[in-house]
Image (cartoon, rainbow, N blue to C red; front, side):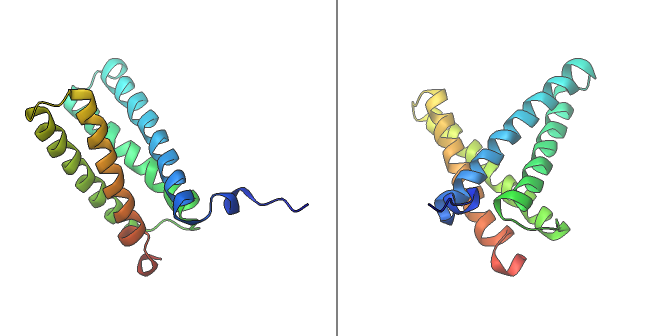
Length: 137
């Protein structure tokens, strides 16, 4: 009986989305740990600590997505800039959607989940089509 490699089992768009989501989950952990350390231990102002923590998570996510999700050998400054831009786009959609839904009467946590889902979709589409699309390799 032939066994399939882990990469083959998660091949195709669903596998790509799963790997992208796993990397994003790791980014949440990086962001949270960095925010806690920078704010509580280093003593940075919250706004500064949060900005640094977000960018550390973006770097983490870019490097893992580049190597694992999209299986490229060498990171690129161009892809990194594009990834940062796409993440900012996802963030903007998340914030606007959460604000709009809460002001329309939706519970904050449900609105946040929908905002996260929308940001994930935007980030994934931008990443597969623009950041790591065929022309970006």
